Length: 218
Figure 1 (cartoon, rainbow, N blue to C red):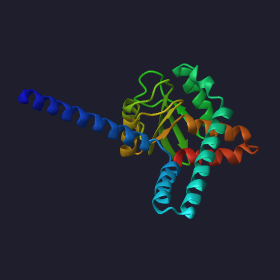
Figure 2 (figure 1 turned 30 degrees about the vertical axis):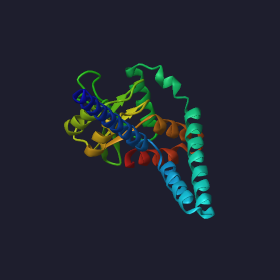
Figure 3 (figure 1 turned 180 degrees about the horizontal axis):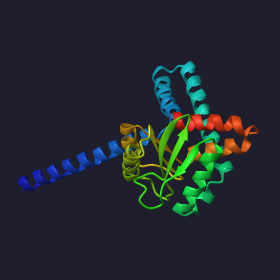
Figure 4 (figure 1 turned 90 degrees about the vertical axis):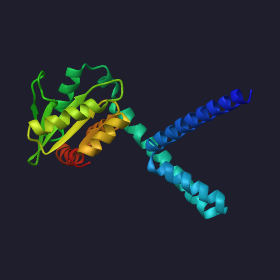
């Protein structure tokens, strides 16, 4: 009887340990996707509660307002960009759309062969800088394969930089691999922001120069 009880306790301990590890991983993953303002707000709230300081409560309120303002700002760009049209495109149509977009913001665009492209759909040139670009139209998160392909294409096409552009978002693993290899990641929110600003700009030439610099530098 005691032997069975000890076995049950051991299994329960293992279960609780695995469950705790899962919860910790979930928490860390959510923190990675949380904005810096939100994390700072939580920290200020903890200090405010600990020290019961009205100054700290005021700082928490200010950070909360900034976080909400940032969210509203991003939603404004997303609504203006009308990216739903991109979601309905085929991969080939998305590449054609991106080609026109890059030309509009001031890049020289060289299309690679549709088949046998060695991992890049375009080679962009801006101020003498060559950038290998992989385009991914997807309803799911873009994974590490896109990053691996564009890293290979960067060497093949003798480019200084590499970039992956998608109408969606990237997986955590893809982001980690891209950072390790210096690959620039441009996702849905980036496209929305640039499109909304491009439509609102009265001076296409000056905007194109600024947009090209943002795409290359970030």
